[in-house]
Length: 54
Image 1 (cartoon, rainbow, N blue to C red):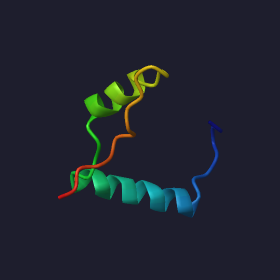
Image 2: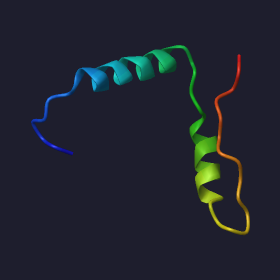
Image 3: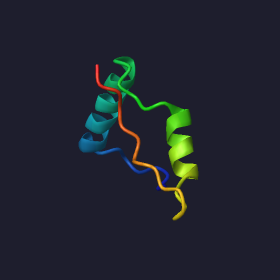
């Protein structure tokens, strides 16, 4: 990470969108992601976690 680097307008927009997703509850549960990450072995692959649809 570059210290002192200014955040671009695009990065700021992405951050605002991500925070809006969190506020709306549009997230993937940490435990689901963790289980998926731990499954990344050739003998037991799992599908990439997805957000729950409302």
